[in-house]
Length: 365
Image (cartoon, rainbow, N blue to C red; front, side, top):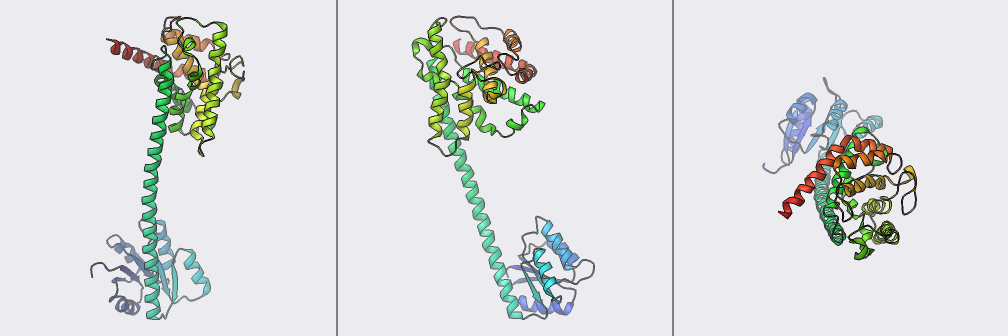
């Protein structure tokens, strides 16, 4: 009948098969087969809801048959009940350890077997509903996480845009920085450098979080930030405070959230991108590999972009000249390994810088 559960009964005794078939037929759509080999062939055409399986059979016994079933993703979730004359506790234990949901001895009580079948079909249906519900909830959670991430990214873009809009001289800087960083990280990945650390990073967080590297500039006055000339020593000291201010601001943000993995990268970008390999940087004079990797990466990207960009007090350097300056600072300003990585992608840096300039010219025309 339509809608009935499908049960395959496997037994090499035709008499036993007839008894089982007659018992099940009023309640279930029944498929009696005389061997485990025939059962496997039948499963390619019939989606069974439950299998009654004998143990002692020629060609392929019940224990080997269930091993095959449980190793196949298409069949592993079908409940299997052993119905067998092998009635020792050891045999029962083997059957259950192999994945059977029940183990019934022959000769069996027909009413008891029917109740066991009914129970295990109900359990299987309940488990399927739970699995489907879990899948639905998981998909909803994925969607919700995506929405939260989009919201975080949107807020981050707005904050970063506000910072950049206050500085008249750095148009497009944040956008270019992310591209430079991706080039460097890809180069490191290909060369297997710093792979232990980079391998732990969630790249969906790393590049977007880099946009906050200059967030501390919000606290710098416009008269210094947009001064149409070189800063005095005193003004430069004030400008330098933006790294510490930015890091402290992000630390305060961290205290308001239970998941700070996103802000952890942002904090390192903001607080350490002006540190130098030889310890002569700011705000803390950190030396060498004690500088967070995010800061060492940002140092190259940030300096390169400053070099190829025009400022009120200087013309833009060519990408070739900027690359030469980066190389000349290997081991002093910059991590030597990162300069080597930069060398492999310097042409990509140049392309990013040139494309940005073309976009500026196109917007102005």
